Amino acid sequence: MQLPRTLTPWRAWLDWFEPELAGAVGELLLRLHPMLGAFRMRAQSGQVEPEGIDDLRRRGSYDRLLLSEWALADAAPEEFDRRAAGGEHLFLNPKLVAREVDALTVAVFDSGPAQLGAARLAHVAMWILLAQRAQAAKARFAWGVLGRPGELHDADSPQMLKRLLSARSLTPGGALLARQHADDGAEPSRQRFEREWAEHLDALPPGCAERWSIGAAEPGVGLGHRVSIRREGPDALDIAIAARQTRREIRLTLPDPARSAALLRGQFEAVADVYGEIAGEGRLSLKQPPLISVDGSSVAAALLGEPAVNVYRLPRYAKDTTATKVQRWGKGKTMLAASLSGRHFCGVIPGDEWLEFWQIPSFHGGAVRPPPFPQELEASRSRARWLACALIKGSHVSDRLFVLSANGHLLCWARMPNRLETSVTADVLAMSYCDQSALLYLRHEQRSLNVVEYRDGAFTTVDRTLVEFAPRSALLCGRRKRRGLSRVGYAFEQTVGGNGGERSSIWRVYSREGEQSSQYETVLPADWKVEGLMLAQTGGVQLIALRPDRKTLVAIGANGQANLYESAYPITAVSVAADCDAVALIDQQGRLVVLRDQGRNVLVYTGGGDG
Image 1: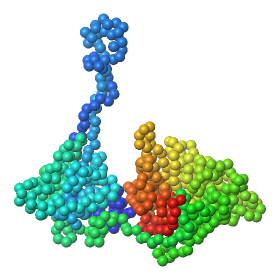
Image 2: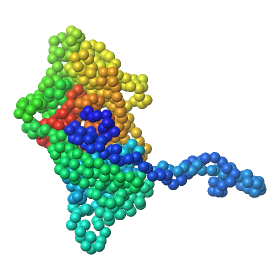
Image 3: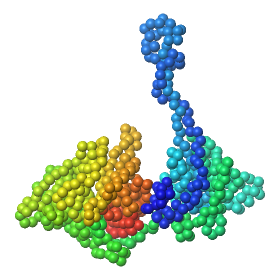
Image 4: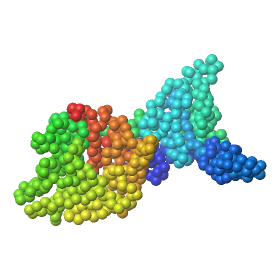
């Protein structure tokens, strides 16, 4: 998504919204940001604690006396006494360190009836502004609702912002309740809740760097800073921000009603265009990931318990549906590696001693004998999932078939007039189509990762990155234009943690487009599952990952993450297209779901079974 430079500080949060809504929220941020003033952090020194040894001293407590001195007491008591009388004993002097305590910014939002409607738009803007403000100051931001003292929430996802919008209440600030309290001589509910919040925040160990009260107009500064919001006519809000020595006021013009309504309903992303459920033949396998064709026009899904696949041509419009094509490769045969070009499904089937190139005309028949089963594929015989396979057509040289084994061997067969030539490349981590005439692969050699392109018989290194250790796993994607390789992205994983602690993975992601390159890294917990790498529409690349619940597919980029798809059922298998914006998945109900246009276009093929 393209954003003005002035909105760069809030990019990670604005990526949660579709472009039109991001522009509307960005206008609110730019107007409100100068009103906040400078960040004021309280002293964050913790208690003094010993950390190691500073030096040796002549004076100190005898519980820190050197062991050599105690040895002297046993061997020569008189000498020990003499050294004590003369002040000659040596004591360990600990190094005392004042621990730095994490700063905390807290915002408490009034969700009562006085703040329903347009006032909640200001809540959204303040939530984002304070989250970024705390991050820039290396502080933590937490938020709560006025009517629930002591209940704090993190601010790390769009779901938490939607939770704020859904926290509506008929108390505090209700006019009827306020009159009842006044008649009874009781403390007004808002003041009581603020007092309880203040008591809770005072009891927190580190204390708060900043405290914000956000809601209807009230005298004073609330918990420390008060943001008073009042509706002014049909299309504006009057906002006053007060601290102990300052007060600032501004009138905000509201976004148009349609965008305001979408924001208040929590519809940040564009509503997906679901083409409906299209019936397919047979029951789909839940374990085998679907295959997406090179151009993204078709998807193949394996059938449960059968040597066959359904091949679906993806429609451009809801009415543009095509009958499912079923392709079978014979009973008793097992597919080892498979590829899809258009609606043509082909693959490699292992025999006892030979390989069968199934539905690959240029690699069987005539005088060409089938190649013997290569040793490098022996470990892949029992795999439940197909190996990566690519048939690359040459304009000046013979066609070549590439298969990447489970242990990192890239096998290549080249069709010669009367024979097949076989070559093997070791230490290959990933392989990806560019188009039907070009292939990319990622190889680790001599502390570097090399991206190599094959085209028309030539192998060319197109990018290189130094690495200290061999990656645990890697991903690759690329796209070509007529003049050559236009974009390439790759990522590799390195595991951190362990030894009894929580394990996580660091993913380092690299992107190159022409002469420009970029990189970023993200840390994911061990229970996240990275499924692929996608070229983003706005440039760069995104990791596609499943959350621990296995129901939410997430796109992770340099500026944050966004939900790509939320399923009602657990997702069992995922494929990400290498050179186009398409993701195909199988859910627990045996349905094939295809996502395009960053998840805004959803196509569902029904199936069944619990394979």
